[in-house]
Amino acid sequence: MSGIFGIVSKNDCAETLLYGTDYHSHLGTEYGGMAVLGTEFTRQIHALSQSQFKSKFFDDYQRMRGNKGIGVISALDEQPIYLNSKFGPFCLATNGIIENNEALVATLLKKGISFSEVGKHIVNTTELVAKLINQGTDLVHGIEKVFDMIDGSCSLLLLNRTGIFAARDRFGYTPLVIGKKDDAWAVTSETAAFHNIGFEIVKYLDPGEIVLINEDGVVQRKPGTPRTNQICTFLWIYTGFPASNYEGVNAEIVREKCGRALARHDADIEVDVVSGIPDSGLAHGLGYAMASNKPFRRPLVKYTPGYGRSYTPPSQQTRDHIAKMKLIPVKEVIKDNSIVVCEDSIVRGTQLKNFTIKKLWDCGAKQIHVRPACPPLMFPCRFNLSTRSIHELAARKAIRSLEGHDLEDVSEYIDHRSAKYKRMIEWIAQDIGVTTLRYQTVEDMVEAVGLPREKLCLYCWTGECPGTCRKKSKFRIKEIVSSGTRKHKEEPAGQKQLW
Image 1 (cartoon, rainbow, N blue to C red):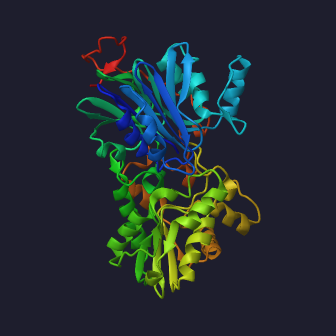
Image 2 (image 1 turned 180 degrees about the horizontal axis):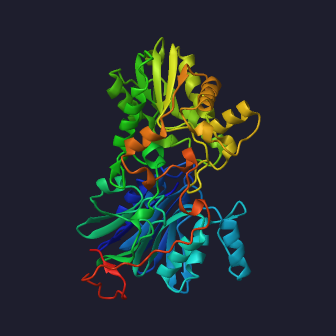
């Protein structure tokens, strides 16, 4: 997953852009980029695998001058992309995954369109989106063409002389939120970016909505469709920042509720200590401790934020190295205690087994009870960069071992009431070497979020896949404009001035 941030101000925006983008550092580990538009475009991209965004860009932003800009923390591609298009020059930042990118690239190549940003023999996704936008009759139509043609998801920010075009993907898998302060407007993936730079939330973009942000305010260029919303539930469980809200629901509060739900099912175990694996597991553990009236302690502490997340890097070797180095055990808290370990999820299971559970046993834990805050992951994400192979998932490894082969229909293993589900959990518990293992149920997780189930993407747990996942979506957004709406002085018919 990547994070994108944009700002339009009546004054110079570079410093605010730096800090607003930096607050997305938990989402990506590979590249960071900023583009500012003043008298001309100024753009800079840095690799972040061994450094932090703010330190890389602190000198750069002081050379950037302009009143509008976009920034990105990218999990895979170098961005923002610059394109001198038939619509004039623009810079583009994206967040999402395009599953049919090879087919789209092949189609454009046949039309004689070339690509320059290629890494590891793969076309840069953001450049592909830029070239697709350029196939439209105007920028808004081009963005709609992207939504029509892709399988997967793509939210984006496009910066040009007009302002910043912000577009949320058609089924709302990833969020985009508009904020305002006295002399500026901003758009962000993470509302936590707003707090310390003085912005107030004014609007959560609807799925498929396209707005133009400029010095005069926010103009809706295409209305969204709230009924199609399928936001990623994993934002609340793990990937999102605790201080952020998604669809108006705070991540920290959801995690506490998840922990409380886990504790409700644990009346049959006696424990001395409740803990959460830093950082995202902490709130789950706090909720468990509140509900169980057991002390919350820290048997494992994270050494500085610099190690980042072991889930997001694309390399397994890098993930393992981070998992090994970032957590330091506190033997005095661990020794001779029965410990509940709340974790956001178990993806592959190897890091939990080799670098977390082992540390607890080595320091003298009496019992270890692992409680993931979400159900077993059964399917690799199709809408953002996370797990990309079904074979690496811990639950699938268990099923493969129990059945002797891979299964196409895993519905019995998804049902937490079934005998096969119980056998799968027992296999995983034995594999990672813990006293007990109990996962969150889908029902309790959805209840913790507090939104209707149909508004949430649960694909990685249940295989329930809305929209583009089942087949190529032919959905078209119906243009709706309220009567009596005040029009922007330059807007064509059909636009709506929001503020």
